[in-house]
Image (cartoon, rainbow, N blue to C red):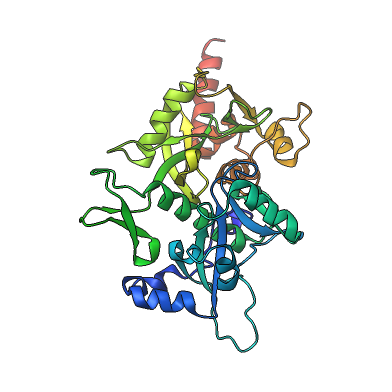
Length: 371
């Protein structure tokens, strides 16, 4: 993953595998939650601070998660802990425990929306001064540590899913948390609801001669050009989805598609959790027909221009997503890769010296036969 340095939502700062059997023991989860090593990532789904549901962070530079204790939660409401979702033991980053308290830190996520009004939530943060409400997207693009961004993304994704899953989708009956809150079950019934992750195919389209890439503009993002992307449909592979998206968004048929890498994206459209599956593709031709209902523009870019966009020096202030996103790494991997040879050079290398001499001999004999 060295070539993907800077990409967010990678790594595993919380050991979720270690909780597999613990989650099934409700009393054990309660015991962990009551322990001195329990800490809480606090969210508020109605603050909508700069682009989405908010998490409490510090006001320091770089910012970090502002972890709460059980005592702090109870000061807001004695009921706040009941809705906490057990994330697992923290193995990278996290708060420092008091002297004598045995680790690791056990992480929980809790939403304060039912207990703090919007005004009260904002007032509490401003009164303390050391803490503030921060959206996941704002934390994503900040200088916060990768482990904090990943844990915040996980907390926000699960809290938002849990809030939407309070009623069973089939029966309409209320649900209750189970297995530490990572699943919900219909009260008095058997229906279960699980957190949802939507797969997205995102990819870089390269010209047939490998010298240009096709990037698209997005409505509302002035000057930004990025990769084509779209949700994977039912009964569709990622490669097939990307071929379809290329036709739908920019009218391009693809000669080949290969997988590149993937990135978790818990801050997806409409608050959903997404899995971005990166692809690299080669176009069948240079002809494009941008669908202006999907993109604001689409065009081919050569390597020198792409490098200025990556470096932030483009004369027209065009830019591409930062290293936090897989789109950046798809573009960067092409821009910093080997420069394709000229076609004539490739042909000479492929035919070899013996065949080349034979071609020259035939041409010479034809020339002298006309004299």
